[in-house]
Image (cartoon, rainbow, N blue to C red):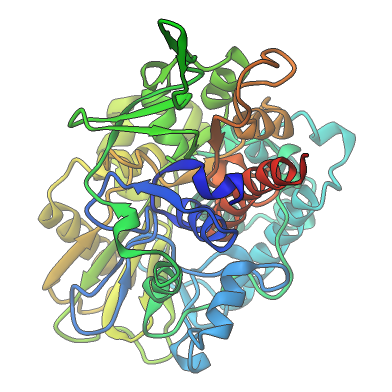
Length: 502
């Protein structure tokens, strides 16, 4: 019998990272795996619901990002889970995905010309591509992403125009990019470090079919014994590097790891794979691990950014927007991503105008009378404290004042609240200005104990997975999945080596 069959592994979290780790271990022959999930459902930041009809709404992850080398895309393709037709495929309106079907309105009700919008969005896409492709000029490398974009835009012919509309559209572009970065502002994001993120080839927005992300989770769940996942089991503490205890002349072997849940249930293990979000680690890591995590890991948890992105779904009794309209985008005279506004706003002021952070309202696949608004950062966190009815009424007022259309009252409102969800405390990771991305992602991912410092301890007692541990694929579902596979492979390799020893 190989050693891997006897090894006890606890996985904390049943999102893509935890499920991918568990499936990999099961397929490699590991027999004793327990997944502890804090929620009453699996999926983590994937949350497929059906609130308005039999058709799905994704409160969390929405798209597959890229095809080449993407295990999530591969699972969806093999399971015939991708969108059945382009007419059912909807994308979020970002600067690089704007089409003439996105209606842009200025504050006050004027619709902006598609040509002007396209000019500014095309420039914005070129400028952000320079950052993502690590092609920034030396003078821009030390700047925040927001400051770099302002500087580069100011040098462009578009900025020389007397027309302030272009500046206003550029603010919308930055506001929209905040949603992609999960940040309160691009002035808080590093311009140079985002070059480590790799966008896989094959399209940024790949839509899933009518089963949504839940259908992919179901594929993984079928690979696991039903009793392997214990739900409603939030973990309180993880004790590691526990030593053997002697009783008289006998030496009793004990497992080096003990995982204790909030209900005081105890799980002993040889290894624990921790896949909780960076948001949870920021709040709980100092008290969760005994002995305390090394300084390098605590520093990484503190330095990496973890932002909130929320969706506001508005369900109407009838469609009031034109058939060719893919979304309604809001362009303010003074938006929150204007540097002068960002640097001067008091907390009272931005809370009062939280709704200005909403980029716009996009149409939703398979829901002809539903719009989805996107909001990010500190304004999203404030929005989460408000009643659904207040948020819905505010959004209807925005739609009426910007478009001038006859907008009916909203019939149903559904809001994600990832920032105040105690088991996520945010949405996904970003790299703040003046932070070394590679150093911190790698420090977060490093397993414990460090073998060069504690060579006599059992190896790989505490492993870390999740999108935040990924240098190149943070923020994504495939990043989470790949991180779970990577940590499982560390254990598979460890026990393969043990099996081969004489």
